[in-house]
Image (cartoon, rainbow, N blue to C red; front, side, top):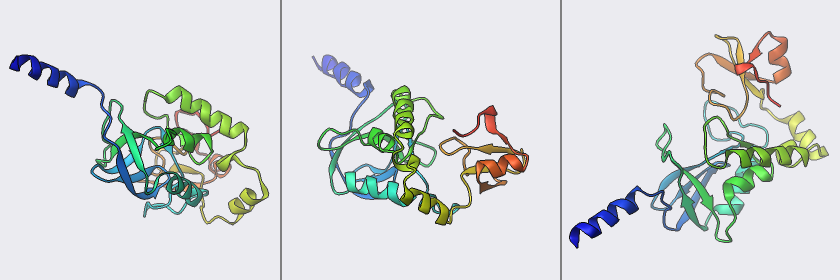
Length: 208
């Protein structure tokens, strides 16, 4: 009988797991939160404009994205669900986050236009998140808005770049991709400026 229970326990531990509901104690930025008993949690499949990285200036719509996540999640008890990879290279927990009303926070951020679908690495909702971003673009929501307010913010933003150029390899990287802001040699500039300066898109794909 003891062996039987040990076998069941081993089976349960091997299954994909969800953490017990936990309190969100702080929102770091649009795609990163702190959860009691878990630590820093990076939302899977989402990339929002940067606001806290000391290597980068505050990016356009970053404050709005952070405020959206704060309004949705801070002080609330959420449910975490994991995918195949449990942590990233910074030892942050990678998770899908579900709010008390059942809303899927990762998806809502992309649907409402507060972030890009981060598709550099595979995850189980990748195709759906691509569709959510496309719908947000077509609906001109959030980042994709062409309202007077958004246009004014873009014109007055101190963010000098929309792409990251690798000055060593002469390619540029789009927001949401692996090497965006992460190469040793580089700087930010608009995509049209990068192209005019002779930089080519990484992997042959420009930023849409």
